[in-house]
Structures are given as C-alpha cells and as structure tokens.
Length: 89
Image (tube, rainbow, N blue to C red; front, side, top):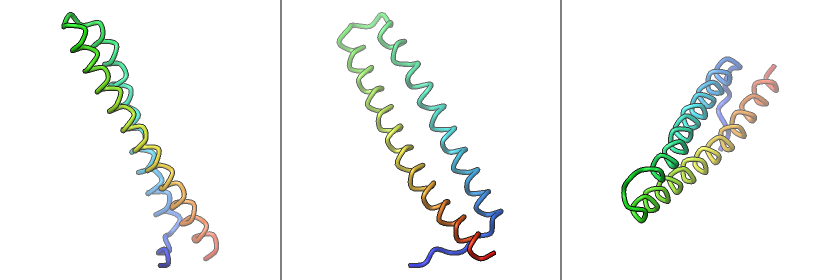
C-alpha cells in the first residue's frame, strides 16, 4: 500500500503533534517517578508501600516503552512522508 503524499506543511504539523505527544508522556513519567519516593516515605506499612512503588514502577516502564515505540514508528513514518514531499519537488 502506497503512503499518501503530504505537503511539507502537513508533515511539519504532524511532527509538532508527535513532539507534543512526547512532551505529554514525559510529564506523566516525571510525575510518576516523583511519586515513587513519596510512596516509599509514607507512614503506611512497608509491605503496602513496596507494592504501590512496584506498581508505579511497572506503570512507568509501560508508559516509557509505549512512548518509545510510538515515537520510533512516527519518526519513521514522518521521515518517509518528508522524503516523498522532497521527491515531488
């Protein structure tokens, strides 16, 4: 299946959306990683704190992996779209 041909402006717009996605995920990861020490320092029983910290770490891993996979796929797609725009010129 052939990729649709985009204009340079469309590629730029989609690139900005991809960067915004990365920024949003980075903010989430920052908040999540800051929450882990707070959970570990809380006054609840140690076993509960460890379980919550592990769950937060797993969530952080999932978000980081998902973001990495998405950004990698998008960068390849946008690179191909930009190359197609340059070939049309």
